[in-house]
Structures are given as C-alpha cells and as structure tokens.
Length: 136
Image (cartoon, rainbow, N blue to C red; front, side):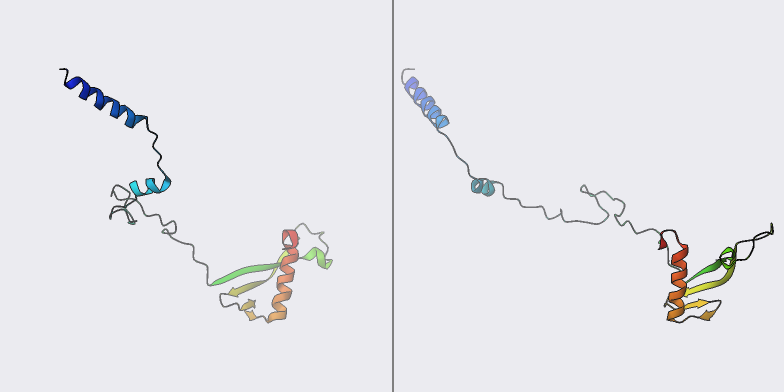
C-alpha cells in the first residue's frame, strides 16, 4: 500500500498541475478544428424541403397572368356646356360621345376608324390630360 500511495499522489499532482495551466486557443486553431465540410446532398433541390419531403414550388408567377389586349378602345366625350349650348331641357345630357379612339399594340391610333397622325395624336392626348384629375 505504501508503494501505491506515492504513485497515486504523483498522478494526482501532475493532473492538477496540467489543469492549472492556462490554455489559449486562437481563431486559426478553431478554424482548423471545425472546418465546414457540407454533405453532398445539401445542394438546393427545387420542390423538396431540407428533409427531402415534397413542397409547393416557390414560383409566385405560376398562376394565370393577365394578358394585355392587342387593341385598347375608349370613347371620347365632350361637355356641351363648354360650347355654350343651353341646358334648359330636362333631357339635356352635358356629356356626349363624339367618337371612339382605338390604339393598336404597334402604336397606331385611330379615331372613328380613321388613322391619326402624330400632331392629331398629341392634340388628343392633351385633351385627355386636361380632363383627368390632376392634369395627368
């Protein structure tokens, strides 16, 4: 027993001495210890979640889209009060349709099926701007 006591005491003292010494670990040491190595199956897979279960696609535009018309058609009206026409009749309608504008996708503009040239288009656009709230 006497023989084992000094050995046990020596082992205990050397372990205590090892614990008592400060240890310093740098960022470089940490990066060497925990280098990230991704598994080969972690790449993005559409339609599958992280556990391999099927999920709905993330495409927000997958539903039906509104398609712009090939031709835009609108009526042009005139306020007869601006022309000095009296409104004494109970059947008087101040806003009267004077024509129809058709705008083709290729930019051509027609008024009552007659093609308009650029100065006429500009005049029509200016008249529309004056009628819209805010002058736009």
